[in-house]
Image 1 (cartoon, rainbow, N blue to C red):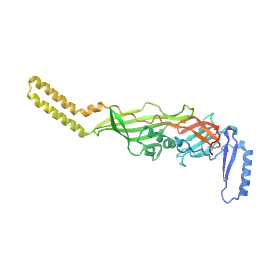
Image 2 (cartoon, rainbow, N blue to C red):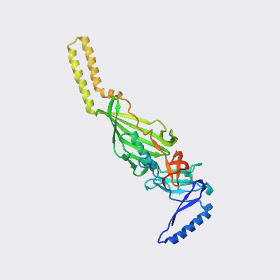
Image 3 (cartoon, helix red, strand yellow):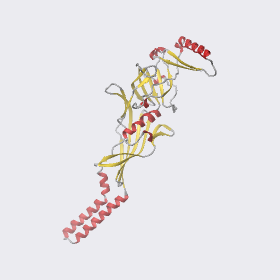
Length: 352
């Protein structure tokens, strides 16, 4: 036998919604059982310490921005306060019927923030798989969310499946080929760490590899209309390190040019006087050195490549509650999981 029941705000009164009985039970017997359970609930509310129920959350409309913030399935509701009248609803959000991957199905009362009607606790893999990776295309034009996947054996990390060609960027006034060679986003200790490596290719002559490490968190802010918005913030300036790789054939080519120019000047110096000979010999050595080290000089003159992270990502926070109540997030915390806390408001016209 299983029972589906709901609380109503902070009043803590439970409404009997559905009864499921195993085996062949006729409608008359089921009606008697339901009546008995309803009577028992009404007479024994003060002895209920834990209430488990299936809770539905209104799905976002098709095309709504960031609808993945709205869980399509919720595992359990948990009610545990000093008195029934103080009971508040806590929910663990699970998306698409996936397993919790280590996050307890039973939500502890510690998951509730004080002074709020409800809290939604979202597992780290959901934060990465359904929030963070959808921020990536905004930071890396050319990458799509499906290019990243959860790391096997580590549900707190997502990685780029293969290198992706990004939109060309302008460096030193020229459009330069740009590739994201690796990317990993990891959820550790209340922070979201981003490791990336990108490649700038200057006509296949000089390649610049840039490794970036950035630390982020998630905060809540308000839009001009007063709606809640979540965005990633930078906890510290990104650490970026670059190295240049010169194509050997390009280096050989410039050195041969230096030898040729130096040789022409050396021959010309034979037909000049002593002063001219000395001057042209010095000039010959200069041009040889210039062309020999031209690739290194070009590297030193390159503009620093951009550091890569996903700042500036914003997510809509609208969410509706079963029973015509709207959940308005007022607080967001990132620790072992992502916790949204807020209040429940009456709202007419919410689709059930």
